[in-house]
Structures are given as structure tokens and as C-alpha cells.
Image 1: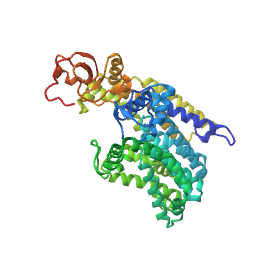
Image 2: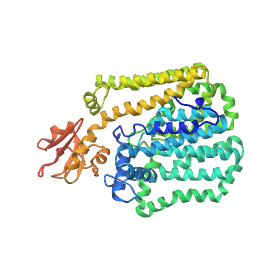
Image 3: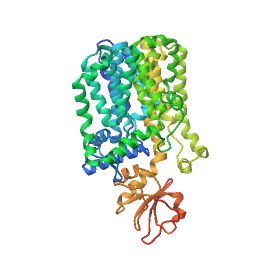
Image 4: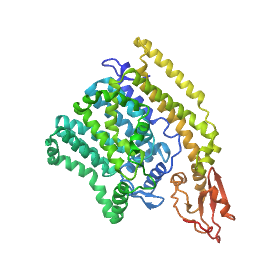
Length: 529
């Protein structure tokens, strides 16, 4: 297995483990179908951008899309231009962003705490459940996570020594974050800066930052041109769609049913940082050290602000908590440095339980689909094959165990705690290669199959009372959401087929079907576009 504890001073291992970490993130990116809604929407919007040649604006199924700025679409479009229109290409920017974030975090920790904590930092961030999911998803969140990570690290460097270089890099990362997700990329670093200076009872770094013209120029040069272009091109529709609806309205009212109580993120955060969440149990005994150590205090304030601020937001989505990742990573590494054996045992037990759940849940749901309330998902689970990965997974763990024993013999001790990060990374590999592809195929294969089969159909194929953005991606043509006109084809739920008597059914898969509206057929009574 790998980690800096196996390195020799002056050796080349520092070049090897980053490459292995890159392979960890890239492995399996193309094995799983796109998950709807988010992955399908980002990927189809990117495909439409590439096909249209208009790289200044995004559309989804031909309609203007204002929910995110342009940054992530540019990177996905570059990847698609090189690797083709496929799942690997649209997910690659997220994987690379997560990889760079891990390397930057490890470099920051190594400068301050040494090699082994740096390795723990990279392993914790790479294998925690929430960051792992974002690294394998074709969305903007891993890319924003990178800019926030770099922003936090350079903000903390700037607060340590006041050097303008760190401040100007911070301005660059904030500008790229604004180009990727919007105002949140400014809000979090600014709040973290203010809280840190308030706790330290000093204001000079803030006034220095406000007076640094180069930093302001960098930020505006990166972020302002596209926003000015979007405002010139779309006017009030851009302000209403992006600034008001997808930013201010999200905070003031639940959007698309994504709400929750004040304790939502406090309950969710331990799940997002599985299997490492138990390391926080080592922190209470370090409470005074946490506050006296300015690095840890700043990490605590970053993470605390994110969790409190988004707890006050009316719209709550799990990935909002991941904006706390820079602070959480440093706190968890500090916990790892001071954790006693019983805390490490809890981490190992959490990993084993999480791994067992991920392996066992698919088979159990296939055998008990009735526990799922949604009829569509019940139907998909009833048709899903039982997972057949037991032998392959067992072989992987057996090889890993032999490697750990061999490593322990070379070092004169088994050092089981050193194997926990390696086991967590191996769990991530198994998730990427077997577990997530099974879920994607179970839930999304009907969309992909019907999308591919519909490529030969003439004219427009619409989505009628369904929302499967990846359908257009696999069809390689926009698929608007509306009622089909006479003679047009439509993607519908199979449960609606009894109401569509006389409509030719071209294909069926899972819970979906492709139908054609007869030239003189009226819409079913009560149907809504």
C-alpha cells in the first residue's frame, strides 16, 4: 500500500503517491451512467454548448440556463472536446479538482506539521464520503470545493505573514470561485477573514487587503468580464434567473422542496465525513489548544461559519456543508494527531460498517423493494440484478491485507492505525469501480437505453411529465419538457401507458417508455405539460 511512512528521505515517493492519488480519483469515472437530475443537467448543458459553439452562455434542452455561472461548463466543454461526449469526460474536471485540492491541502499541512499529517490530510479529504461523491459527479461542487480550499489555505497564509503574494493568490481563487458558483465564493472567505481578525483583535490585515489594488484587479479581471457579458446579453433575465432566483431566493425560501430544520447540517456533517467523523472525539480534550493555536482557530471559524450560515438558509442541500471542508480537514488531521487508540478503533469500525452497508444495501433492496415508497424506484429495484461483486471485492481486500502484512514486517510492526487511511482509500476504489456503477445502472440505464434508441427518430423527442436531463445527453439532441405535438415522440412514464391507448409505443425500459402521439389524437384528459 502507500503513504509517506513508507518513504525514505530524499526518495522519489513524494512523486509516486500523488500519481497514485490521481489514479484513485480518475478510476471508474466512465463506468456509471449519469445520475439525474444534477449530473444530467450539467452534462447536457455542456454538450449543447459544444455543439452550438456558443461558449458564452448555457442552455438546457434549448432553454436558457441561469442556475450556475460559466466556469464549470468551460472545463467540461474542454474535456468533452478532447475525450468525446461521454460520462468520463464530463466528470473529469471534478476528479482533477478534488485531486489538486488534496495536493494543496497536503502541502499546507506538511509545511506546518510534517509528512505523516500531510498524508493523513490528503487521505481524509480524498476518502470522506461527501468529498468523494462530489469528486465523481459531473457538477460544479468539486470545482468550487477546489477554489474554496485554495482560498482558505492562502487566506491562512496571509494571516500568518501578511505577504501580498498570498493575498493576490486568494483574489485569484475567489474570482475563479465566483466564475464557478457565484457570490458564495466571496462570502465564505470574507466571513472567515472577519471572524478570524475579530477573534485576534486586530484589523491591519483587513485594511491592507482593502488597499491592495493588484488583488482587486486580479479578482475583477477573472470574474467581471463574463458577468458583464451575461448582463449585456440577457439583461434583467440574467439578474432574475441567477442573482435573484438561484442565490437570494435560495436563502429566503426552500427551493424545489429542499428544506430542513436548524439541526440539518449538524446531523448531516458526520455522514459526509465518514469514516473519519469519530476523530472529532479527540478534539474536546484539545479545546484550549484549538483556540490558542491560531491555525486551528481559523479552521474552526471557517467550518463553524459555513455550518451556521447554511443552517439559517431556507434551502438546504447536503453539499452546502462541504464548503466547510478546508476547516474540517485541518480539525480532523489535528484529531488524528492526538487521537488515542479507542478513537482510531471507532474510525476503523465506522469504516467497516460503512463498507458493509455499501456492499450489502443493494442486495437487500433488490430482495425487499417494497421498503422504497416511490413506485418508479420500486419497479427499477424489482428488475435490478443481484450484485455479483463479492468475489472481486474479497480478492481486493485479500491482496490489500497481504500488502499491509508485508509492509508491517518491513517496518518491524504491523501499525494497524497506519492502515486505516489506506483501507479508506481502497473503499473509495471499490465504490468507484463496483458499487456506484451498480446504482447508476439500476436507476439510470432505462434513460440511457431509450436515449440511445431515440437517436434515429426524426424531429424532436420531448419529455412529458418527466425530468430526466441525461436523456438529451444520451440522445445527443435537446429534449424539451412539454406536451408532444401531434406526430411528435415523447418520453413518458410507463405507468401512463394505460391513459395513452392508441398511441404507438416504440420502446420501453424500466419505468420509462417512448411513445408517439398520433396525428389527430387529443391529449389525455387532465394531462399537464
